[in-house]
Amino acid sequence: QSTKEAEMQQEEQKDPEEEEGPQQKDPTQLVGPVLKLEPFVVNLSEPRGNRYLKTTIVLELDSDALMPELERRQPQLQDIILALLTSKNTAELRQIEGKFRLREELMSRINALLVNGKIKRLYFTEFVIQ
Image (cartoon, rainbow, N blue to C red; front, side, top):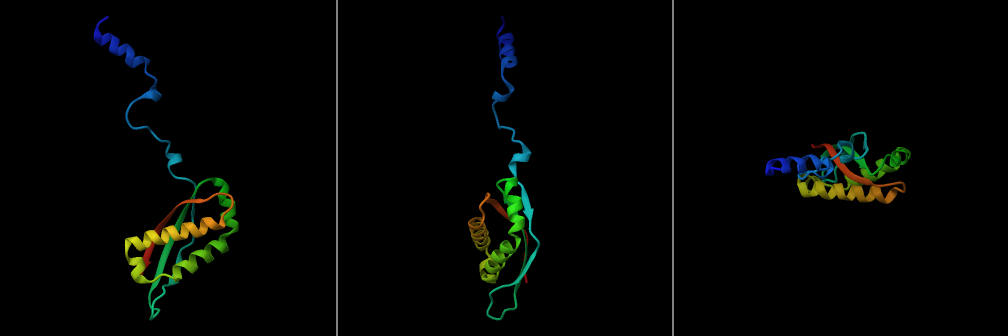
């Protein structure tokens, strides 16, 4: 057999799952189930009290099993989020580090409440300070 024929036979025998290069990922597995919360409009902790934040939050869950618990705990979720948002001031939230810190604090407080799973990621889909 020629070298070219031998190479072609080897290519045909390769298992498609053993292909080299980047693995194809199932798009449904890239993002978990999500829960979009109603927008929050809160006064920020300012000396003159004249600034407010409007934000919309989307929670990415680790499993569908967590959805019923989050729906039942909606008042607790809102309370946790409102308490934290109103404790922040404009200077903290204008910086990207402040937004990252807020995201981590929210996830930590929400996850401490949950028993049937956890929040994998938290997204701000709207974030306006006036």
